[in-house]
Amino acid sequence: MSAVPAALPPDLPAIRATRARLGDLVVTTPVREWEEPALAREVGPGTRVFLKEELFQRTGTFKPRGALSVMLNLPKDALARGVTAVSAGNHAIAVAYAAQVLGTTAKVAMPRTANPYRVEKCRELGAEVELVADVHVAFTRVKQIEAEEARTFVHPFEGPRTALGTATLGLELMEQVPDLEAVVVPIGGGGLCAGVAAAVKLARPDCRVFGVEPEGADTMRRSFAAGSPQAIDAVRTIADSLGAPHAAPYSFGLCRRHVDDIVLVSDDALRQAMLLLFASAKLAVEPAGAAATAALLGPLRDRLRGRRVGIIVCGANIDAATFSVHLAAAALTSRGTMAQEENLMAKARRTTHRSKTGKKLYAKRDAKGRFKDIQTYERAHRADLAHKSKAEVKAKRKRGVKKTSRKKTSRKK
Ligand SMILES: Cc1ncc(COP(=O)(O)O)c(C=O)c1O
Image 1 (cartoon, protein in one colour):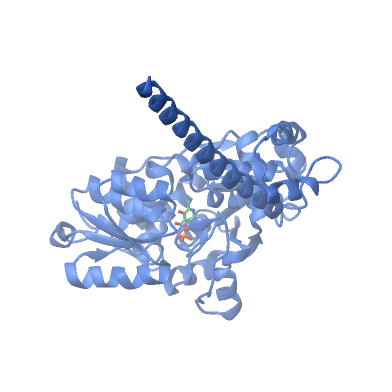
Image 2: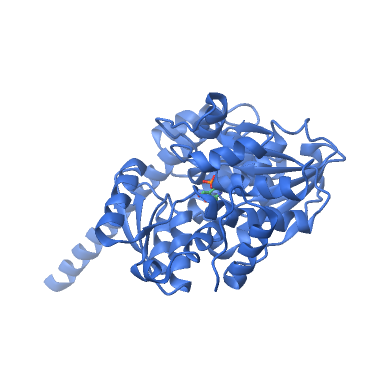
């Protein structure tokens, strides 16, 4: 296999060569036009929406495109020594997958707060996982691993080869739907957007590209405003995959050059988009996977009215419990569809284990049984869950005590 030159910036031949090199280690994911009355109600008539279903990529996100693009270009001896990575989950999973299919080993540092489902997925793929205090410590730890074990660090979003990998996704989309007028791309650190935006503009310079960030992790928007890559102190969003604490020069440069605008979405909007994708498009996605849809339903709705819009549905690695809490929260606020809301309300009314906090908050719902906001619902739900499990433990203990005393009685006889 010959190495693909990492041109600066990516060009079409390099993107095509990268795609050829990735071969069947990644799949060409489907694009589907999303035609549904529920969507039309949200975006207005005339807007045509094309879902790039990258959640069906190997490992559940676009991430193997970048990780493999880097790792396939490592010298043989470096690959044999293994790789290391830092990640809240999806990049670690992709690196674990890439290491497995390329016949080497991966050791990854993840923050303790990483979703246990993702940690498990990494381990299943054979990676050694080190859980550390937070993402900043994880970056430090990974540098130590790199130095001590001579493993190659595979960056989660920075660098020309990563961008070439993500560019294969952008080019694929433009080949599948050549006459798109806009593409909407989620941004974490910016590697996905850097590659996709470059490929879109190379294929169709007049197609607009919009980046989307969560309100609580708007690193790239701040970097655009400052004119250089910026860091943020705290990341506050349910879209953990979009919570990169800083931007980096190469991906920042490509985004700056090719992205027309960056918009922000709230956690509530992410949940609403997850609900719509689930109920109407039949896709179960993680919050990051719903970010582009949230932007189209919110800040981009009027700007893209009547246009042909590509939406990058970039990932779906979420556990069932977290997914259901987000969906329930979305359905219980005013924009949830009536049917779902009614079902959930009926369920909520049947709840027998109601904590003191839960009771108080449920009592404050409006005449239709709706909570003031999602945070209030989540507080009530959590308090009830905690109360319910305490009640179950108590009940078990009680049953245990009864059994013991019955045994004692029979022995006496
Ligand atoms: C599902 C998903 N979407 C989007 C992103 C953001 O990608 P980037 O950090 O390259 O901007 C990530 C990053 O891990 C991700 O896992």
